[in-house]
Length: 306
View 1: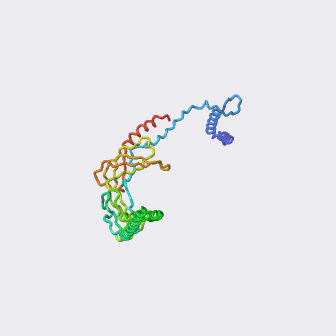
View 2 (view 1 turned 135 degrees about the vertical axis):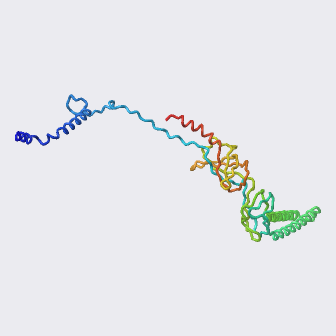
View 3 (view 1 turned 180 degrees about the vertical axis):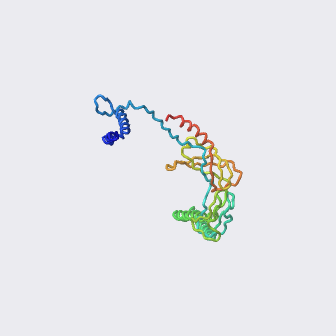
């Protein structure tokens, strides 16, 4: 019996023990083949291109990114004077008086600078004396002409000389009027460029002045705000330096839009201020109307089909 069984084992193929694994693999191959067959009658494998057999998959709608809507975000701005000027000399002369220094307030018409114009005064006196002499000569020639004791040409020449002398007198007097510089408006001295006893050249800056209480706020706002922003729109402005909040009102819009930044300049008057406000202070402005204007835009954006 043992020999017979041993002979049977020797006659058994080596792969006979792997039949269960081979059988399982054949089963999987058969399932895969049946899925790839179109018509099994011909025996040839045919790949199906029919997409109707595949289950329909509904495309998930792509969520639309909402457009940015302006909100009541702070807008940076700076306090400026409505009137600014650089006072300069119109003649070359020594400065003898400058009553107001940096930070001093002055009224309109106040003397800001006076020059030593003694030489110009002497020239004016000489011009007036020459004009008086030519006037006397002309009057004499006119009287003699009534008696035909002088020629018509001499009368005309004396009249021309008198006109020239009068013109020279007015020119010197105009120079003398520039010896004193008066304030064109009430304000404060921002910078004292020249000083007393210095010789100022013609056209040299002497002082920088600006109006004191006549202030405005300059803002840079998005150009999209032009759909609702108009003169008269109110805003609040919190000053960085003091933390105080002032009220303002838009007075005018800029003449053009910056093509790169898509912004426009806006100026507004300060309507209510309790604390110290000086030119050059900066801060942030809030427009309540910006939030009101953004609400319809947000609703319209949400209502658009995706």
